[in-house]
Length: 226
Image 1 (spheres, helix red, strand yellow):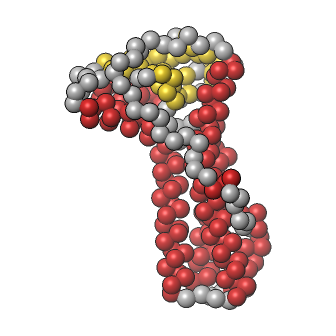
Image 2 (cartoon, one colour):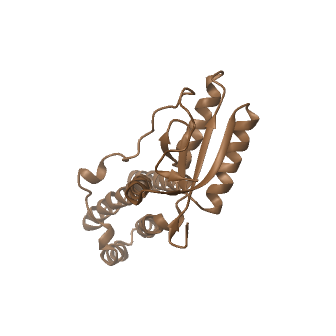
Image 3 (cartoon, one colour):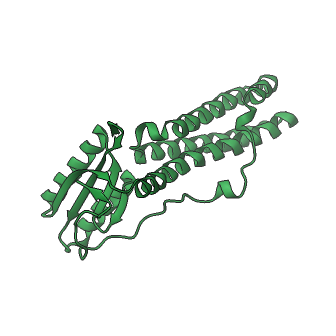
């Protein structure tokens, strides 16, 4: 994502017909799903990568097919502080998605510790744990779909995957009521077992951005240059 010490970004600017409104909303939703940063109305940024270029080119093609206009620029920041602010905002969003997975796994394993101590397991508990695992897998897949930041989010992504793997191991052992082995697994992976604080259970810092309109110009912001 960097070339000769300078970080490259891809900027998508677009305009779509005001009617029907579904076209504008579809483009907006697509950019939300990509986790792109809204510099201003109809101007979005993501760190450069081959994947991002491919996704932006496809989206630009789709916009043109629906009768709109779209341009892609390779840009660099003129203000390093501004660039870091934007990059951190993107990372906060993606890391929050992965941290949500880790926190659900932590509650899963904390509950497992309680059951191992009581040596308690039944069909109802098995169904509850199975449902939680299914939901955490869905959350992880959703986080991956939104994540085009590559190496920037590698640590958070790997942590979430490891937490899920530990949960699956413990669940398989509990299914056969091998409480001794489950205890050993939980002791070996104690770092994943805790009760998240209230702050950790809050929502993602990157809620949906306001829906754009077609009234704004699509000129590049002054802090970036093409």
